[in-house]
Length: 315
Image 1 (spheres, rainbow, N blue to C red):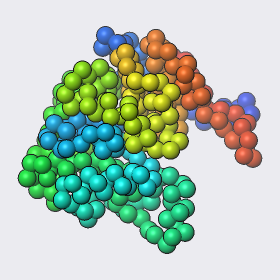
Image 2 (image 1 turned 180 degrees about the vertical axis):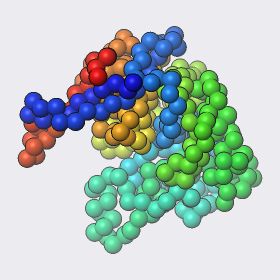
Image 3 (image 1 turned 120 degrees about the vertical axis):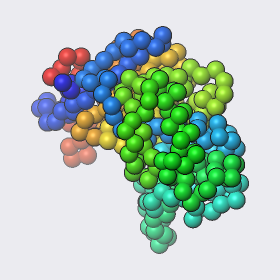
C-alpha cells in the first residue's frame, strides 16, 4: 500500500494528499528507511541524467566543469545554459540542428518573458534536456558513432547508458520506455535508484566522481536560478539532488545517506520536502535546508497554509 507522504493544508483544512513510496539507504548501503513500495519499479525520468552523463564521459565525451554539470542536469533555459549547450555542440562539430529533443520555452520565467518580447519562439536549446542531448552527441562525435540515430535504444551510446545504470543501481534496468525528451528511459526500482545516487555521492574516482564533483561545483547548471535542486545542493554542501517528471527525486549526502522518492500522482511539489524528511530519518543533518522542508500554500498572494510531510505509517 502506498503511504501518505505529504498533505496540503489550507487554513487548517487538509485539502489534498500525496501518496507514494520512499527508499532510504544508510551510509553503509543498507535499506534503513522504507515507505510504500520501495521495491517497486518506477520510470526514473530525469533522475537518470547524472548516470547518462557518466556514460557519456566514459565513452569519451570531452566534458568538464559547467559542461559536465549541465549534462547531468535539467536546466531552466537561461542564457548561460544555452551558451554552454552551444559550446558543447560546437566542439563536437555540430549545431543545434543535431539535437533531437523537442523545441520548448525555457522554464525560467524572466528568460521566457524576454524571448517573447523579442519575438523569439521555442527552441531545442532552451529545452531542459538539451544539455544531456548535447553530451550524448559529443560522445557520438568522439567515437565516430552515428549522430542521427543517437536516441535509438540499440545505439552504442544508449547501450552504454543502460550498462552504466545497471552497474550503479546493482540491478538490471527494465522496462525500456521513451522519456519526454525522446531519449530511451530504463526502469529501476526505488531501492536501485537510491543505490545509484549513493554510488555517485561516494565515488572516489573515475567518471562517477567527475560527474558528482561537477554537480557540486556548479549546481546552477543542474537546475537554474531559484531551482529547488540547485538550492538543495547549495544548502547541503557535498550533497547531490536530481528531480524528474512524474514526482520522482533522488538525493544523497556526502556521507552516503541516499533516498529515492516517487509520488504516485506525479506531482513534484512535495518531493524535496519528502526527501529531506527521509534523509533526516536516516540520521543526516538537514537543518541547513530547513527552508525547503515545507512549501507555502497561498491565498490572495499570502501564506495561508503549507504542504507538510507526514510521519511513517500515515495512511
